[in-house]
Length: 234
Image (cartoon, rainbow, N blue to C red; front, side, top):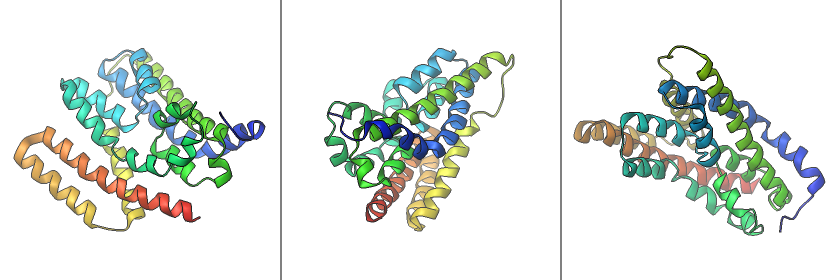
């Protein structure tokens, strides 16, 4: 059952998710625009945002589709990119276990930003199934809205926009800077840089993507565990 304060969950969840609203609409817009600009129909971009909803993995997926990557490569990259969610889920097992009816969607909709909001929420809010559901639902709604707007803009623009694929690189740079500031340890990022250069020299571009993502995600997972522990202390 979904327990909690039904009447007050929506405004509390919306207020908590406002920072995500600003970011997801913007990044979702970029994804929708990139997908259409790459040659895919608007409905395909929306389909991914509704049924995949994986943020960075969606950006990567578009690039892999365009490059003709195999399904095995796409599956492996997606697994590596989302590996950090295993650490996120461990800290939310108890809150999610209280709500078996909505747990499948809560697990599906767990993103970096949703985890950040839920892990820093009060114990009362984390025990409220309606709050968990609405935060997760609001965040996905923001992403889908951004994707729809970006897809529409891409369909209306009569020419191809070069350089949109750099949006993914820019997003990862921002995430990397945030993780450096949060983790305050240079070693994981030095390992990631050295491993990426080594992979480039030994196995080429695709190997660089896989190894670089793996090491980077391991670093982000470590910082995610630290962030979750800090949030619980608060």
